[in-house]
Length: 354
Image 1: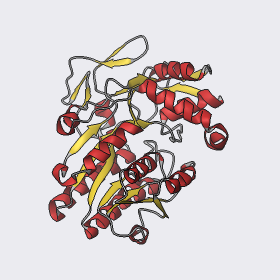
Image 2: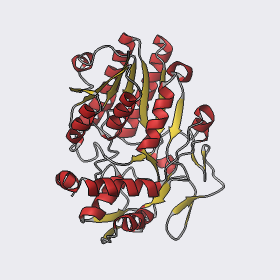
Image 3: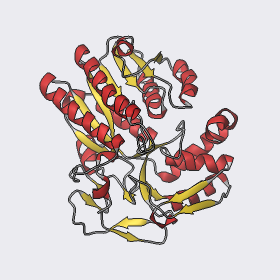
């Protein structure tokens, strides 16, 4: 019996991964560990139970809670405070403690049980000032990367792992980069087989989008329920661009990486929607209008927020060459799936997304 622990397992990404691992065969035992701090994660508990996933209500910061999950062969580390704005409006305690202490506790749990690890990091490990130095042109609906760039590791195809890492990046990004460094040390010192995925924006059904995290889910929810939206920063025109990775595509990647984690040990990849699945906020509005038939007013705030960047697209060439994986679903698929999911669960989600 293969034993898999998914931390943050009642969250958007964690629940999708836990259910997918359990659906992979009878000889798989999957446990989801989650503190249920984020609103909406409790709605995933019936899905996990129906899918045969065991649930432990606990916290990655507690070694006892991790031990309550039992022996493990693979740890899929999805737990995090995911907001890039965490700490800007008050104490940094939670983002530091959860993302750093939690990562250490998960590494220790994996080490003690001789387990492998797949760690979900973030594109936010790349420094804000460096990302703002990417040469862009301004089109009618979006910013686009210029063909010629002064910085290494960036082109119109996106950002690679060769992009510079010097400079501040937000507490969220810093904690994730620190965790990556610790993983490298554990791999070298203890032979812990681990692979790191620096993910761009992940989106799809069961994402409880908020203003500070989960932009596609937020945009879709506002177009279903109504409410306020605004283009914030860069003149308030909505031309800032992000690539978006459908959660189903991420699940395919992690399942693939988990098949032989030792063979991919020590590898760090960028993983995102890529140039084939990216959109500006202005374009995202149009897609949401098409999917729902609803049009809502979108405000404009010219001032740019701290830690924001005008353009981020993932170059997936490295991970495709190493694994054969590439995204299959685009932004239109993501928006359509989100809007259908919200509409199908309109009453149950109203208290969270409306």
